[in-house]
Image: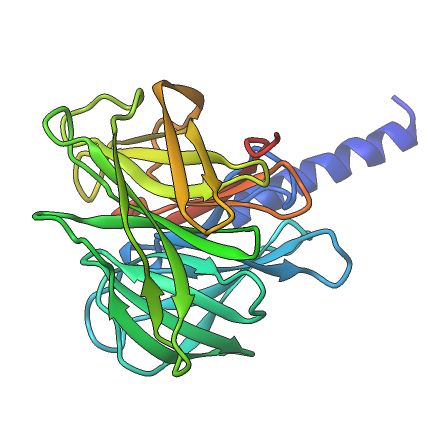
Length: 309
């Protein structure tokens, strides 16, 4: 064995040992899971695209955490895929939410976002640097008995804005209810919702008792509705989840949403051992960034090619 080969093998051995010691893998490869939180307080409950890194190789996203106690972290910035994954806290300035479950950037309003709690309170906020300032907050319209929300998406079409959200459902006896409504904003910043459309949705996978049929929603540029679904057997798992093609949304010239759900949703990919609760189609690519809230196991993120036309 020549000296060049020996040096190469030594380098590979050292690199492998370093990666094992760090408990991670090289950042940026599609399909690899990267740790985003060490425990139940750092799980990823929702994801919103913020922008690309300076070199264009990675993305910055905002992630919400479903923490409930005062002073616990509600919002973080995650950088993914440029060779140096990292999470940094965002200071929450304003009324403190309980159980944030979803977040979405407001199209056409740079730095502004809507975040949703499990009980249906929508927070409008503006993020500047490492601070998120609450502009206003309001309840969702048409909240049903027992509704528990984990998802929120915004669609801009024909100069109009439409919101989609869902009661997550629970097993065979309670399918998810997908809601959609036009959205505008009052002069003082409050989100205003128009007439609400409802559709029932049952996940094709997973099929465990208590399955959350919709744990998040993302809409592609062509109007495909992608949903994540998740099963949770307790704080230590086991977990299971999937992303499916649920149907399509269109928006009329008057701004009215039209939802057409598939009778048999197409399961695009399954994720045994992970509980996917955050999903975002990344602009300018066919990739989705997925985030998990694995309770005591913390949170993970990955990218998958799920958002093509």
